[in-house]
Image (cartoon, rainbow, N blue to C red; front, top):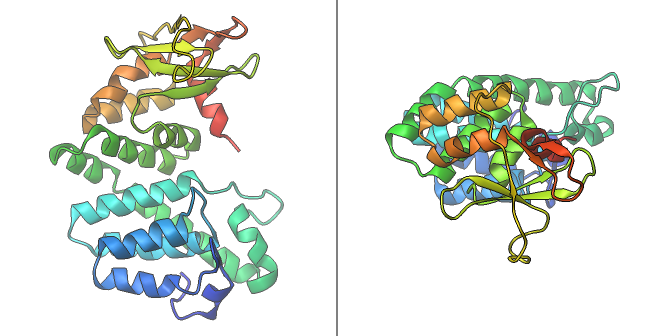
Length: 278
């Protein structure tokens, strides 16, 4: 992985230009995993406004190392979820002969192919290592009684490590489960999905119910047997971690509805996840 003393950090991208301050923040976390430091590193330097950078990929191997050395499951969980968010938002590799994600493409002319490949390979090794913590952090989150929102982030991270970025984005974007927005695969119009206030079953609307409270809802037909592999795995994760609200919603997310705009039969889950595919 990229040495913390390397001059290459000054060539890496961050939200404010150079990533030259990132190594110092990493060193501080290595000494003590403090909230203020990690928040500055994670959400100001590495994942600002839902965007990751070349500096993010270079930093993840050090975060995986901190997780590996820590005796605290709380620290492991925090790093697991954070790096899962990074992975969910990473660009696909270019497929143009170099298999590098978009975050590293601008670096090619600055630091060369060898440095870029080292950053990327170290990142992918770290992601594979972090994915191995899934069972431990899920068990821990269930045992200590994390709330449903926190549990949903753990499930989203698990999905990201599996390569299910659309699923991860759905779970983090709608992390409270109090609304979802899908796209009709036939007409492309948004379908607003809200839980019924009486029983938490999901209903579909043509317009945002916040601004159009008077409109009629459309009934979503839930799936009685979850056949989609992603949703079947998510359902099992909900059971393992004790995320009760998502568990109740999954049959509806696996179901279908008559589109409120064009009346075509629309599957909910593809309509949700397709909105987050590159």
